[in-house]
Image (cartoon, rainbow, N blue to C red; front, side, top):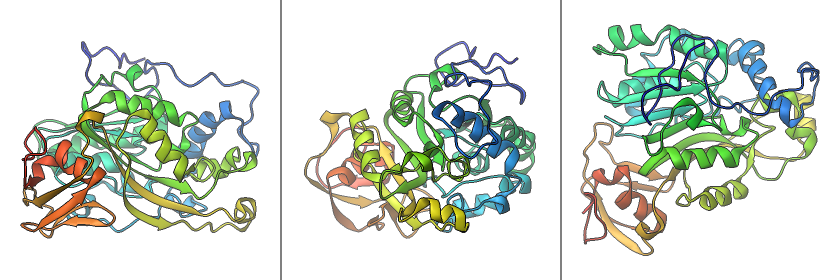
Length: 369
């Protein structure tokens, strides 16, 4: 049993080994009589069902019955280069629907929710540099074993670091404080097709808001639906495991994020999801699913910009030779003045990405002007 919460302070705890024993309250205990071999799950059994599906049922991405865990844009720039370095086992056992790592993350403290086999952590470890820090949290022993198996050799032999700058912690994304994630100790949280698996999404966002530093960001790729799903879909074991059963209705997600205190989410990418299995298609009916990447920033209400600003991308990171993509429809080109409005203006002036932009008139503090 590892004492992963005893880190002597309010920061991120270290976890030793791949077994259980991570402190912090888990979701409600499961009824010992609940069967995870039946088709449907109740809310309490979802956690156990997800553990079984990702830890034992799926052997590789080829085992998936839908494209929900593989739909995404092609990676570009330094993310694409870093992916080439990731160990094969880590790649083959990873189930995600996007690449939620923004450019310019050197030196940041990154937390990966539901890291699985750790693919995004391995990519992030290369991008944050030796001075940065990456922590992956997951509840599945089998996935964590894969993630931990290659970490030290990867950082030392592949990246050439004197220390391992990533670690993996067993725990639940609804209870980050229980695994030692302190208040305002994280600059960037990433997540790849995981939030949909939670039965308490409101709690996930509350924990994210607590853990993120002011100006921090939650960038995540996940599955969204164009409607509220019926109970038979939300409790169907395979649909839950394939990230469809727990898909968020998009308008409900946007409302939840802002009610938690976040800036209105900014969409980055969107792609449709195909369901290959005929039986599952029949169960889903006319529901339409998409894999979407969102940027969700933590900015105090009195720091938010209500009107527009004229900004110029200054080109201060390696991956931005042609420009900086803030959202799906806003890419700022180096040296070119562009007027941005509302939430985009707030993001470029009042968050961790402000260092990449020059602002024409005094609009904020903290280095963006």
